Structures are given as C-alpha cells and as structure tokens.
Image (cartoon, rainbow, N blue to C red):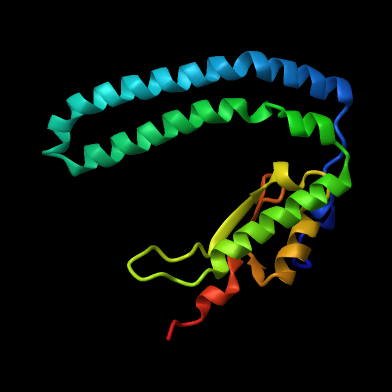
Length: 177
C-alpha cells in the first residue's frame, strides 16, 4: 500500500445484513439456471453466426478481431449479470474473519505453489501473476491479502481492492540458468 492510497479501502468490507444475504441467495437459486441457459443460448447463436462469418474472415482480419471482441464482450456481459449472486459459503460465513483468513491463506499458498514450481521442458512457464477476488478476502480486507502475499514472495500490482488484489511473483524476474 502506498502513502497516497486510502487505508480504509484496504480494510474489511462491512458485514451485510443477514436478511439481504438470504434474499440474494434465494434469488441466486432462481436466477442462476436462467443465466446459464441464456449464456449457452447466446454462445450457440454466436457460434452459428461465426460459422457463416468465416467466409468474411478469410478476406478481412479486422472483421475477425472485431467479431472475437464482440463475442468476448457479449459472453462476459452475460456473466457479469450474476455479480450480485450470493453463494452458500458467503451466506454461512459472512462476518467470520477466521474463515476468510483461512481462505486467503489457502488461496495465496495455492498460487505460490503454482508460481514456484520448477519449469518443465516443453511446457508453459508457471504463472507469474495472479488475482485474488474480493469474495476471497471480504471478511479480512485487502491489507491481509497483501500481508500474506508479501510474506510468501509476491509483490503488489496496481489493483482496485474493492474488486480484486493483483499480485506478481517477484522470483519470476530471475533468469533461468
């Protein structure tokens, strides 16, 4: 955290009212199947349109890039409709700091294991960047994520801590022998 950043944004999120969580969870149970069906239907339509657009992409690379960007934006837009969903663990553990501490510790440890794994020949390099979403650290705050991550060799990347904390594996800057 830099001196110019507001320390309040790195603190835990306020606990949401139980009635609101229960209402959102019930709406999630109803809306999730509808959202999944909508996503599949849009993906199928875009796939069929893409088959016909293949003739145009043989001539124009700009059309192909534009179509792929449109496809990505359309499917991500549908996925973001579910951003208000509440999962069962969120409903059960809202305000439980020990649960969120364990969740952050496990998440950062998993990313550390992946990033510190030795590179295998003819395989992709281990990931050097990761993103910890707000759902994982809601009860303890982004400051705790930074503390745990810095202790395991990660560096902070510019992040909007109201959504996610981005990290970079600092050992990745070392040159392989």
